[in-house]
Image (cartoon, rainbow, N blue to C red; front, side, top):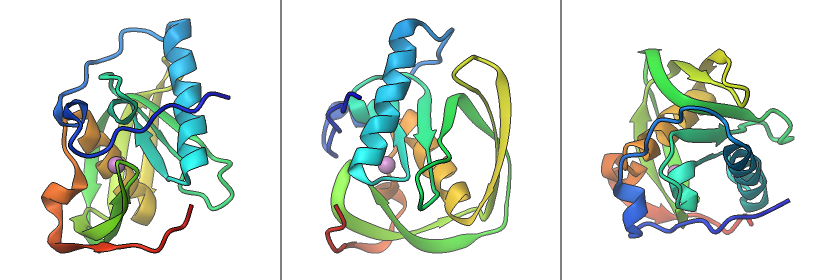
Length: 158
Ligand code: NI
C-alpha cells in the first residue's frame, strides 16, 4: 500500500492536459494501485492521475459506500450522455469545499482497463457525475470552473 501526495488546487499540474497511455508497464500498474489506495485513504469517490502529479490519462473511481467496486479507466472518453442533474460536488484537490455543478444524469464511457482491454461503463447520478468530474481533470479542468454560485464549506468527514 502506497499513498501518494494529493496535489491541491493552484498546483500547475492540475491545469495541464494529460497524455494518452500506450500500455500498462509495471510502473503504470503500480501508479494505478497507488491511486486506488490514495483515493480510499482520502475518502474520495474518484481520483485522476494529475491529482497525484502524473500527467497520464488514468482515472480511478469507486462510488459505493462499501468501497469495494473500483473502476479503473485508461484513456477514457465519454461516448454518450443525457439528462441533467444539479448537485453538490467536491474534490480531493480542494478539501473542505463544495459547490453546485450541473452534470448529465447519464454518462457512457469507453476506456481501457488495467489489462488494456476495452471496457464500457454506464453510470447515472453519482457515478455519471464522477465520470465527468474525473475526466475533466485529464484536460486540466477543476469543477470550480463550473460551479454555480459560490463554494461552501463542507463538514470534515475524514
Ligand atoms: Ni477532483
